[in-house]
Every structure is written in C-alpha cells, then in structure tokens.
Image 1 (cartoon, rainbow, N blue to C red):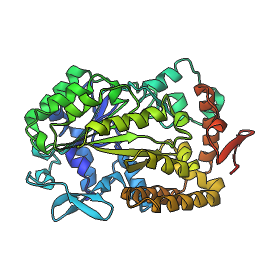
Image 2 (spheres, rainbow, N blue to C red):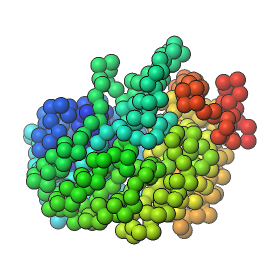
Image 3 (cartoon, rainbow, N blue to C red):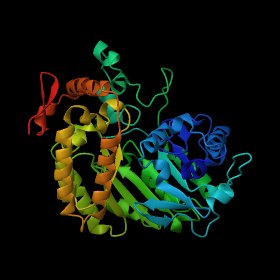
Image 4 (cartoon, rainbow, N blue to C red):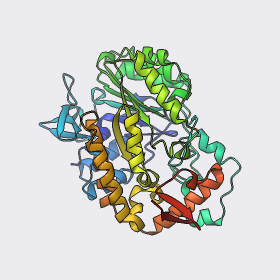
Length: 434
C-alpha cells in the first residue's frame, strides 16, 4: 500500500475542480457537480484513487510525487509518514505527531470500499479565485488574473507553438482544449463549504488557503470568521500563501487569525532583491519588507515564513536569493517548479554545471554563517540543490527555456539583462558573465 495522508484525509479546491492535494493533477470532482465537502470526500473518484494506492499503484495524477521518489527525493506525500498506525508529520529528521486525541486516520479508512469516515478529514485547501496583483513567470492564466491581462491580446506565434510553451499558449494547468474551468468561489459559496465542514467534519485540523492573491480577494476574511465557529477551531492550524505585497489591514488580518490554535503565513517571495520585480512582475521589494515589519509589530502569535518556488531563474541568482531572504528576518521554506519543464531548475546543469556548483558552495558558506538565526535555511537549500543535482531532463528543455525567456520578455515589456548579473542574454543565448 502506498500510504498518503492527503489521499485519505484531504480535500483540495482548485480551478473549478476538487482533488485531494495540490500535487494531484486529475480532475476528480467538478465544482459544477458539487462544492460540498460531505459530497466530495467519498466521491467515487476519490475512492478509486485510494483503491489504486491501496493496491500499490500510482494514480496518473500523482506523477509529481512518483517522479520525486524515483529520484530518491522527498515528495509531498512524504510530508507525513505512518508509524504504529498513526500519521506523523516529518520535519527533516524529527517527527511531530499529526494525530492526538482524535480518531486515527487509518482507523477511519475502510479498506474494502475505500471510503473514509467523516472523522478522518484532516486537511482542506481552498482557492477562491485567480484574482492577483502579480503576473509571475512560473505561473499561468489559471492561477493569476495578472497573467490573463498580459495575454489578453496575445496570439502565440509558430515559435511558441512549436516549442509548446504552455504558459504562453494558455494550456498550462489545463486538461485539454475544452478545459476552461476557473477558480470562482463566491463568498456565499465559500461560507457554504465552511458550514458543511463545521457541521460534518469534527477533526479537521489543517486549513490552507492559496490563490490568486488572498489579500487581494474579498472572500478571505469572511471565510476565516465563519471557520472560527468550527467546534475544533481551537485545535486548528490555519495557513495561507500570499505575496504579502497587496494593500491590506494588518490589524484585521491579526483579528481573523486570533481564534485558531496556530496560524502560519507563507510569503511567496520567490526571488532576491535583484530579480524580484522581474520574476514577480507587479511586486515591490520595499513594500514587501515594510508589510512584514508592520505585521510583526502587532502580531506575535502567527508564524511567518518566506518561501522560494524554485525555477531556473532562481538558480541563476541563488546567492542573491538567500542573501535577500536573510534581510526579511523570517524562516525559510521552498518548493520546486517541476512543470513546465522548460523552467525546471535542473536544466541549468546542462550548460553551466561547474558554475552552478560554485554558486551553490558560495551560498552554502553564506548560510552556514547564519544557521544559528535561521536553522531551516540549510535544510531547504539542500532540498533545492539535491533536486538540481539529481534530476535529469532532456536537453530540449533548456532550448525551450531560451525561447520562453525571449517571448515572455517581449510580452511583459522587460529585459532579462537589466536584472541578472551572473548571466546575460547575448544573441539569444544565455552566457555566464560573472
């Protein structure tokens, strides 16, 4: 059996579809069929997915975790491991018990029909809409209204089509030419989902929110207020991803997070100062830094982490990335851009392995001088470097990146060479200059 905490205990709302986790790519339930957790949790497609895992078979939509584990890297599935019949959350080499006094998740699972008792739901991730004030280079129209605006009048040319640059073609995160589903949960619908959770799922412990940009969306605060009425609210962990670069009230955000046992903000910084406004188009580094300072002045109970979603762009300026992150005085987190493959971080190794390893060593030396203050930094740095060193892709992906860089610069109205110091584009080729 391939045990997965999320397959057994998770519901994840995406762009018009509902699955088990952020990594699961299959469209298990469509939002136009139902949005209620009580009708989703044991939907036939959820049970079919659990059945495959029970029989030690990877579902097709679980390919990102499967690929990571084939390369002996930690996958999202391995966020939790089973020990003595209980799921534990993993943090590096330590275990934090994920289940306390509630009925254990594996005891809620019926291995004959692959249904899970409502007492088993532990993790829910909600997305309201694609409304976002950014248009980041690793994103797409599905998750960012900023991308929709950028591509509003854009018609892909033959070069884009021939290189299958899915973001620019509008096909990234889509399941085919007829897939036009969108994230579109109104405040009323979001409250209906939470009311269903409040009434039917007594042991929900982890509620995550993702976007678009939540602090740019009107559904977020009312949903948190309704969720505070859940009978298990005092045991809940609330977390959300944000660029923290929108206009919002730090006082109101503190108020709506106060009722829960724990709260965490994961700020998607995703770039150092040098390339921040290039990669995170629409963002201002100084505004980000000031928002963090002002929030921490009045909120002493919410954990604030900064996160790096790591593509080839970040690897090219990785020393500046970590040096800039230290300036924000927060703990670290990281993830990998596995798809689209043409911005996967590992493709830097095709032409610049020696230079990249040198950058890694310099960055590691920088981190080691800081580990007393930021103990997670080295852990996540090693996660990134292990992936880059051990993942092998077709060289064609590097060529696709060069075209994507050129085309995205044209559409975004910006120039790679104005932001990057280690690398420059010369005659449409990537050249190491420093």
